[in-house]
Length: 253
Image 1: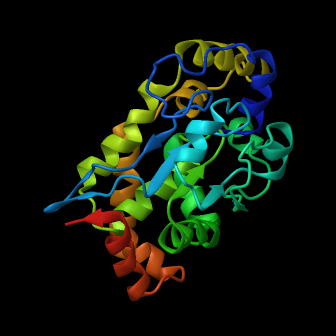
Image 2: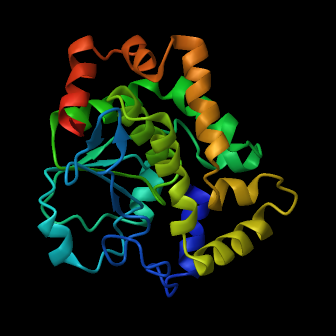
């Protein structure tokens, strides 16, 4: 998820990244297809939008290639990419770092997930819109960060919301990440970062949790401020035609 969390990876290279058994691609945390979610009378299309953690330990290149990805949106910053370079093969990787400045500041400031997501949508709106626009323009597409929980969770949730996916389905997709993070990974990350930030209140939440209430809160706050998550995207540069296009691309009716 972050620079500090990525640093913890040096202590856990042997951890079983496939522990829960639900990651679509072996060696990649939290890799899944965003197909099959309720969207009014329809469902999201399979094989169009994927989400995951980083690709540094991708081992099943054949399964990865079989997805036919045409683009990868990498939301990580430079230090994370240098530490864990992607093994994406020939698929074009589009860098769109969402956090501005040091990601470690979220840990140093002991921010909650609610505060982090608010900062993300306020401070990095242009990058978020660029990522959502890429989902519209190129498919199949993978959106990922380090663990696929926060930056990926927010970006994918906004794309799905603008496409007309049911809010409960969006929130459930976000919350699913928590059960896909291996217990051994969580234990090692919490141990490592607990030594760095012994008095941190939000450490477990930031590194291992994706509570439904947090995503509900973010989407509700965008409703209150802009009218809807789609209106948030409009306010930061997306057109009505692009919003309509997201529904055409992502939803089968």
